[in-house]
Image 1 (tube, each protein chain N blue to C red):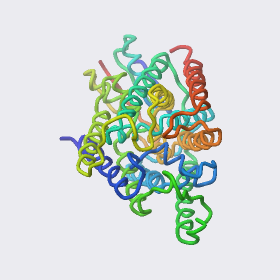
Image 2 (tube, rainbow over the protein chains, first blue to last red):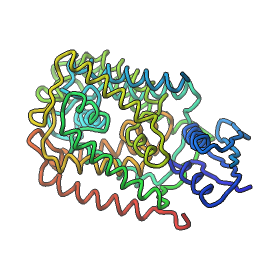
Image 3 (cartoon, rainbow over the protein chains, first blue to last red):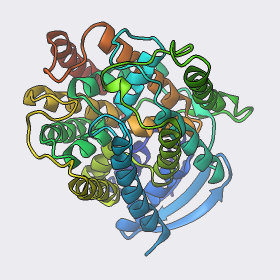
Length: 69
Length: 359
């Protein structure tokens, strides 16, 4: 599984990086970041593509989700 | 209907309604709410520029900051963070404001102006969209100002911005009540747009409400178009469409809808610079991660980089009026035209320079 760190990045860079990873052929990606907005946007993007999303970490400072094609 | 959609429809209707109400209660025409104009007036109220007609510390902005802060704390989204190319963001804030003051309004006011029938704002909106597309060009090539870091040891940094708004409110109350004729420690316009304002508590209350709603729905027109072009999301554009329809309907109802280009309130008819003004704003907004309103709200969520961007916008307003770069109803100034064009070049260079090499 590939990993992607989008901690602290401004909108919409986390989504762009996620999209780029899948465009490059990634099948399963663990994304770690900060802030609800980037998390919501990535999940929205993943759902719109029909990818499965699983939350693996949600603490006050950090979240991590696994997206699979 | 899910909660998110209900929030979005409520935000659109309430913000549109408040914008018309504030004009009916005394705010300048088509300026129920305008982040750029209000920051400019606030800069003047603090004496940072000498344009006597645009000096008033706008309670709407104080309310917006505090309302968004309350909403962020309530949803556990207040987190002090910062350190992502802060000086570059300050500079982008300056140029974002110069673009707004050449056009005469932020993206929210562009929508409110269209809602009043001001077709010059349609030209501006076309410029905004083009500027956003230019910004998206850099985003797609790996533009990134770098990661902000969370301040885990203390949240104090994030509170400074909120404290600043609270201090402004105290100064404003002193200005109104302790020494109204000399206006206390602040400057108050006696003529012009700065002298036109709704009653303090109505402005403050409206600002609080808009702040809460803007934080909840992540209100941002730049972000709305950006996400539509990048990933096909239409949700945010729908909120602005609701604001627009609400404002048109209410303006028709109160007989304030006057379609046309000429003689629109606080607007000029120079199509090229209406277009280019919001082009620069849209470009800066994409590189910063949000338009002026969104930067204000992010500041309230503890984003100290956004707070510095807001200070950059205040500095931009002071620069625009001290160096005669801001437009008036007569049109843009020569200095404004030159600096605007230079701004487009400089911000484009920033967009190109901050590409991640491996992106």
